[in-house]
Length: 271
Image (cartoon, rainbow, N blue to C red):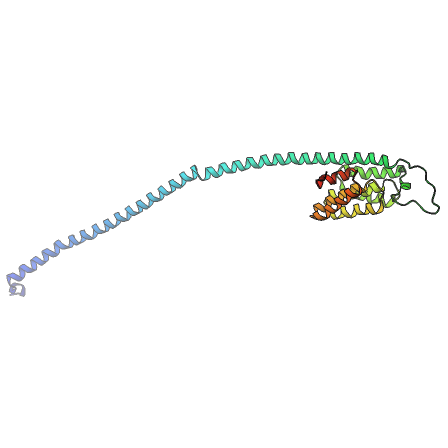
């Protein structure tokens, strides 16, 4: 008889029960594993869905904010700035044109005054006793003779350059005039316009030097008060307020009745 046949009935029953239990347990274990995996996948999907929902909500909020407060405001501000810039440019152009016109009127006024002064300066003085062997000094009354046609032509050419705001050309033209016609009745005026043109070019140190040369070379010229006033203006532009004040005070003391003296009083608020 085989060994299987020798087994007791209780052993066979136990073996059969074990096999039955194993048969039932296997699908149950498999079912538990699959359910856990599904639960984990579902949980992951839920988390991803929640994250996506949060992102969508945040993006929607940002878009709404940009539309209502961000880009819309920035766009409106940009458009306002563009309008302001355009308006300011227009105002600047108007002001620049006004300045140009004012400068032109000022130049014309200077030229007109210069013409009137030259007519007074060139009035022949009463005859004086001749001083043998002494030539007339520059700027003296004896030198105040009517200009020759050549002198007048050269002077007018330089003055026209000044009127056209060609200050460099005016400086060159008047400088050549002073060198060529140092005894001319127009020499002092030419020296004055050199300094005035340098001031217009913002060469304030050069303007001061030129006007001081006028005062030194032509001390009797009616241009001296204007030269002193121009010196004070140049000193002020250079930040030398103390020097400008001294020049104005000196101008008032020496030429109180001149137009330049009156302007000096106004600057110093003196009545």
